[in-house]
Image: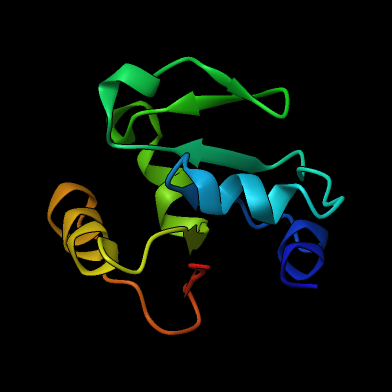
Length: 104
């Protein structure tokens, strides 16, 4: 439901964290929106494909995309550090309407 809301209004969706939580989320027959990006801070994951979508490191995403995006963060443990990184690296402070933390 969340994905449909943002993909229908053409707002980019950023999945932050290429991890087991993302795998479980995508394993529930959810198709990746065309305007979705997967980001992981681990440079070892850069350029890998997940569900036919390339994994990026944060610096590879354009500022305009960051400014318009809705974020789904797949780690509660590191969510505060990720939000701080988005604020310091991109100058974007996310409000509660800009992100969701999913961790199972």
